[in-house]
Length: 352
Image 1 (cartoon, rainbow, N blue to C red):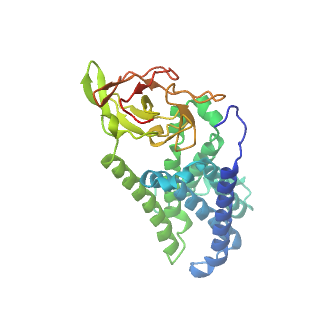
Image 2 (tube, rainbow, N blue to C red):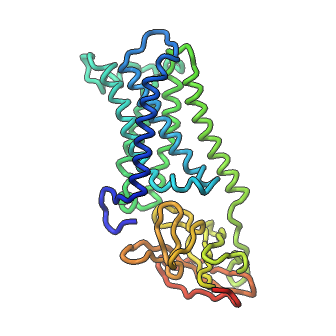
Image 3 (cartoon, one colour):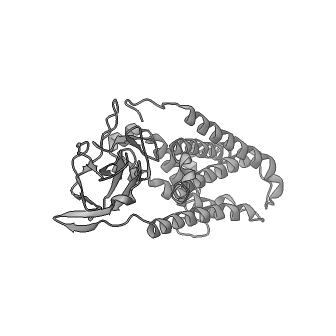
């Protein structure tokens, strides 16, 4: 969390995360450049500059695959959550790797063209009406533009400026970029190889990413949050009080489709929005420490009694009025304005 916009607020976790990411990138490039060339056959010799371009292109695709795999892996197994914290750093480095790939392409294939390199790139192949000879360069250009947009808007300033919903929709461009890279590879980069092992490996990675998303979606549907049940007078039943452990929450889906997280803290119940104000992270999957719930995605914290982040932070989320009817936990589905204090409801005979 931050109370002012600075390029990066570094901490030990970010140093280790970025160091591991940089080391993995360097290792990948070294292995690709030293090990791969002698194990692939080509219809014509491949220059070193071309191998450099392919190394960085393959590395960027692999990094994109890992980025897109982190989300579903974290949904399937909470042990992957630490990889989610600084995933935007991963995305920014991927954009630089992809940009280096584009630089090698322009510097080798169009270095001696009398036409300016960018113009030559766009005009060298215009067979858009032919499937086999379709200009695969256009897919790569589109993917690179998407990655640069995502990298340029990755900071929290842009999330605040654009608003979280718009920012989130903008960053769905990563899926369009990934599909474009798959098309880029399929149509062009490996088209002159006799041995298609590398092509198969890359497309298998894309298939694995798709499979992980399907598996995570199926798991969410099978084990998804239960719908709140109407309880009369406009209120809805979310859970039984004995189903909510101390320091944790029970999540319910309201008639509006929004999710509410009902927490038990010091033997009392409070209800807040399940969506973190930062990136809509699932607050109900976090736990209460020192009186505040910590979002499992990026560590934003909120007082469950007020929906407010502890000072000096200013983030706020909606709260909900809550009541007990016997052992049933009832919630008013009409959310209070963000940051509205609500008196917690004691659980009879609850151990604090």
